[in-house]
Length: 462
Image (cartoon, rainbow, N blue to C red; front, side):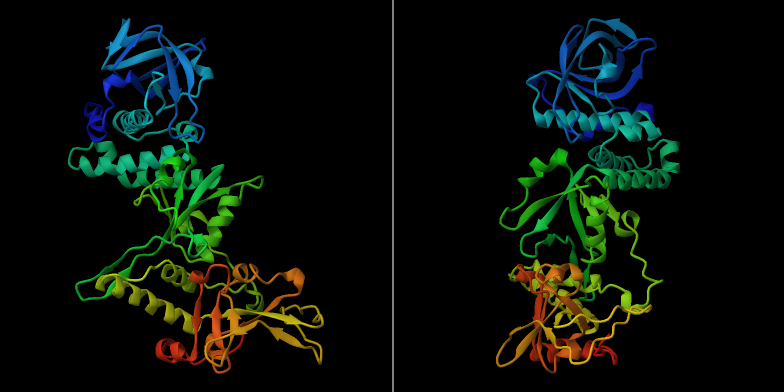
C-alpha cells in the first residue's frame, strides 16, 4: 500500500506555506555510533541544511516545544541542501536526546497551533497507516500517548471507510485483528494515563451521560446505552470552549500514587451510575465498561453483605435529571420514554434509608446478621413531604448516602423498597446538593406510574 501514500494529505487540510515550514515525522532511524537521528516525512514549505527547528508533539500532555538543528537533507535518496514541498529525510543533530517519534512536528517559531496539529495528523496517518500498514511494534505503541492512539484509531477508521475496495491485502485481511489490538492499547493508555478530564453535568453533579434516543418506524423510542465523555490534557483547553459553561464543567481525574485513581473513578461511573462505556475525544471511539473495569463479583458473599447498588436505576435517574423542559413533540416523547424506564426500575429497587440507633448493636455473626439489643431506639431520616405526609429519605447506594450522612456521626442504613414504605411515607430519593440527581415519589405518582411494575416480593424488607 506504499503506493497509496499521500491519501492523508487529501483527507486533512494542509497548512499554508505562508506560515513558514512544517515537517511531519513519519518514521525515525537511529544512526550507528552517533547521537544524531534521521527522520523521514513530508516537508511543507522550504527547509535548508543548518536550519534550527522547533519540535512539538501535539498529542502529548506536555506540548512545550523544544529545538533541534537540521544538519543534513536527502531527497529521493540523494543529498540535498534544500527540501521544498517534498518527502525528505532529515538528519537531526543529537536527535536521540529529543522526544522525537512518529507524529512529531518540526516547524518554524511562527508555526500556528492549528497548522501544527494538521501536520501531526497527516504524519500519523502516513507513517502508521500508509507506510507501515499498521504493523506497529510494542516500542512504537509505548511511545504513543493516549491522544496519539485515539487519533490513530479515528484515522484508521476514516481510511478504511474511504478506501474500501482499494486496500492492501494486509490491511483488508487483518482489519478486525488490527482493531482489537488498537482497542487493547486504548484501554491500557486510558487506565495508565497520568490524568484524564471527564465531562461533568452541573445539574446532577455526576459525569454527563451521553445517549441518543430515536423513534423506530413502529413508533417505539429506543435509547442507546449511555457513555461518559473523557478528554485528554493535550486537548482540554480547546474542548472547554465547545461546551456551555452554565451546564458543563470538566473534572480532572488523576491516577495518583496508587495508579488506580482512573480505574476507581470509572468503576463508580459504570457500576454505581450505570454508564456503559467511555467515549474518548470522538463519538465513535468507545471503550465499553467491561473491557476497562471488571464488574464487582459478590458471588461469594452472603446476600446480607452484598453492597446496595442500583446502576440500572441510576442510569435513568441521571439521564432524566439532565433533561430540560421539552420544547417539541419529539422531545416530549423522548422524555416520556426515559421516565417509563425510570418508573420500572424504581418499582423493584432496594434503597438505603439513613438510620441511627441509640446503642451499638452486637457484632455481626458469620453470615453478616446483626442482633439489635432490646429497647434500642431507632431513628430514620424523615423530611416534610407534600400535603400532610412526611417523606422518608432513601438512597440508591452508600456513595450518595455518605454525602450527607457520615459514619462518624453514627449514621448507618436500613434497606427498604418504595412499595415497603409508600403506605406510610412519600419517598425522597437521593436527596443531596443536586436535586436533579434524585426524584420524589408520592402516593399519586406511585399509583399512576410505578405500582403496575411491582412484583409480588418487591415490598419486602431485605
